[in-house]
Length: 142
Image 1 (cartoon, rainbow, N blue to C red):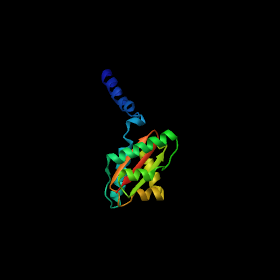
Image 2: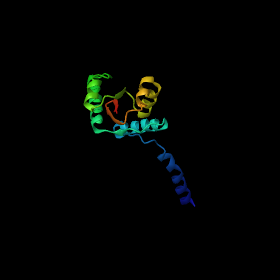
Image 3: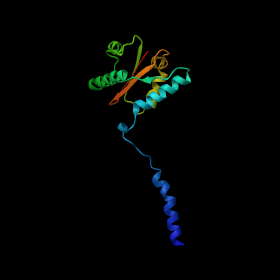
Image 4: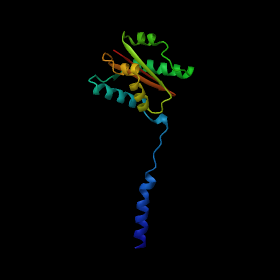
């Protein structure tokens, strides 16, 4: 009987041990993928097409995020050059800084008239999203 009680108490305490949250370093999370999934869900809920990942736009977004990271300043510097390199006359860009959660960044973009308009731009079809440090670039084109 005592051994059954000991086993029962051990089993009852097991969930408490397992209930500790698993904290992963930020680098282990796929920040860009989560952000894109949220934007695409938002677009589809508004009757728009989902955006497809474009490697060229992804590279341009990565370069811009790296540039902001190096300068320690958020900006849209050289946006026209990125648009030219993308080969499109219609591009939009949102940038963010210091958001640990892609969902929080999305929420703030959604509340900002200009950022929200960019995410819901009907004509855009392809996208690149990149994060360097805490600097994020969403770059999308027709």
